[in-house]
Image 1: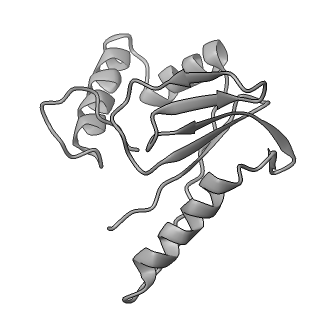
Image 2 (image 1 turned 180 degrees about the horizontal axis):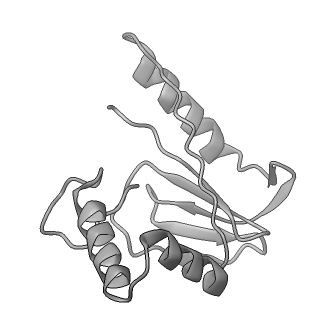
Length: 133
């Protein structure tokens, strides 16, 4: 996860997002507006968005094993609800499959990765991804 717009830079932490931010700011400045004005226009047109990242640390020699056990538990027993919202589809990127609540299975086009993503009934989603960083 991160922002990788084009594959010319492989660092998803900031550089491409910063370039896009500068381009958007220049666009709105050319219209005599601030970036905040432009952002408000986008909110009015597309709605507001909230994102929250929760990062848990698993230090020490067994940290990787702990992360693996947690994601295995989610993979073995998919939750029916998260935060009181019904899970309507689940994506398992390690198997390249998406499963809907009705049992329909489709293939994901993304490269395989140890990531689970749960889509909720209100359109929000939760991803679980162990990291070595």
